[in-house]
Amino acid sequence: MTPREPRSQPEQGRGLKLLLVGYGKMGRMVEELASSQGCEIAGRIDVGSEDWTAPADVAVDFSTADALEANFPRYLERRIPVVIGTTGWTAREADYRARAERAGLGVVASGNFSIGVNVFQLIVAEAARLMQGHDEYGAWIHEAHHSAKRDAPSGTALMLRDAMANAGFGRTIDISSTRAGKIPGIHTIGFDAASDTIELTHTARDRRGFAAGALLAATWIPGRRGWFTMADVLKG
Image (cartoon, rainbow, N blue to C red; front, side, top):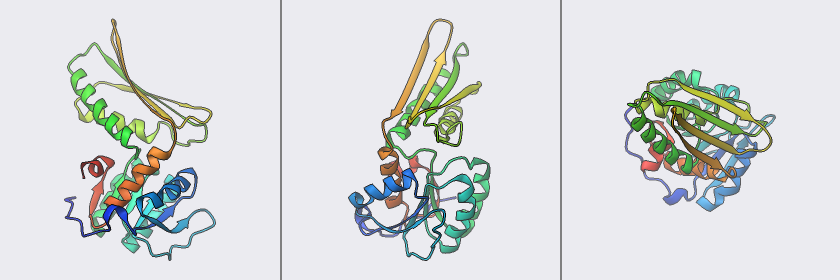
């Protein structure tokens, strides 16, 4: 979908009203950081609390894949732009995109909103481009997260795999996962041949980076129509 020029919006998100959908650890972190971006929380949607009447400029959805299936028609009905940080719904993406396009809805969806991870994705894509002509190197992705994370592999791992494939790396990319303890998130990309190994790693120390990126996306999307990623947000 061809994006249209954004309408005027409050500078740096000042006065932007956010609807938090999913009030778990990420939803609470977004709320904690919102005031620093000049945003205010207009309402919260969570299990047992489904009041969709609060007037809001943008929804920030960190619910679950199943909840998103129920939530998405609400965004279309209200024509409220949405930032989607929920993962595990890639099989439904084509349907969501088509429905958003018909409604003229602005959506920013990403497997990871961390600015560092999105820069890491660009580095990984460039490494894959450089390695694609060297058939002696195999590639893998390993990701580790806390024991409560539901989806495996992570949305970030799939995002990195797709970045490598889109950069021209056509060989098999093995993906493995670890779920243990309280790990916020570690992603390692590796290339291995008989004589050497190359590894690139991004390590998240807490969830603040994810929440800060989601807020940046929330201040960017008002007035835009189309389906965007965090890479589009960082381009400005």
